[in-house]
Length: 165
Length: 112
Image 1: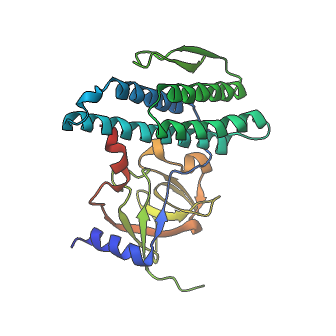
Image 2 (image 1 turned 90 degrees about the horizontal axis):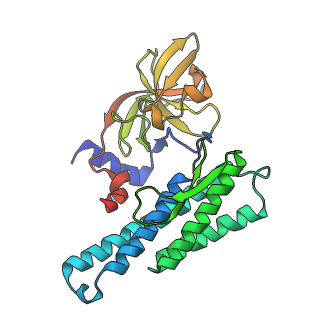
Image 3 (image 1 turned 90 degrees about the vertical axis):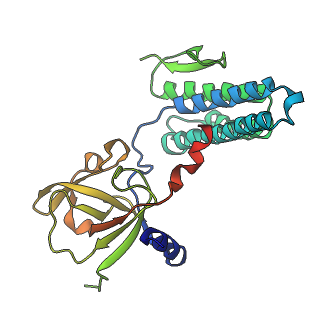
């Protein structure tokens, strides 16, 4: 048994403290871009799932493909929630957020869960639309204008909110 | 002064001291250190928060030390909170046991 394995086992009993470095400082570095990319990924996974030929699903290769899409969808829907929660929890304040913002964040959490639960392209589009609204709110608080444009090179053929910088 | 056990063991939880101190590994510290030098890796109390952090000393000026993470992109350190009093140093790292599994990243591999 190596020293690391021993320490890990021991840690299970005595719980050593932990040493951190990166934390919710808050560092002031926030950007809703990652949430939008993750929402696009969820949409893309639903598109790919829809493309799978249902008659081939008993085939191991098709099943493998399907499972991978679902896993990525699940992961990215969770990423949307995590990114939005961080901005909302650490950056939003009474001065820049109102009841509508809180309602929007709440609806994003629900929409991301729904996007996990089903494979509907409409659910994914609904999630993306809400995340875009959130991005617009975010840049407005920074007094930065935004544009909506097709996400460059994304096969989702859907829009994204970009800051005009 | 309360008795301090000379040796401490802590788990590294994030990436600011990459590549040398990978998350999931354990550091062993000496709490009875008698001096500090530039280049030493130390465990210290965060100046503003209830947490312990691991950093490398980059400058010593009397009682004040400047600490930086090795992986500055992922690190909160003296660039944000300024130099800190050396009394915040809990111990000097003298041994690191690298994790044998990349625990933190296993979930992220799904998309590959």
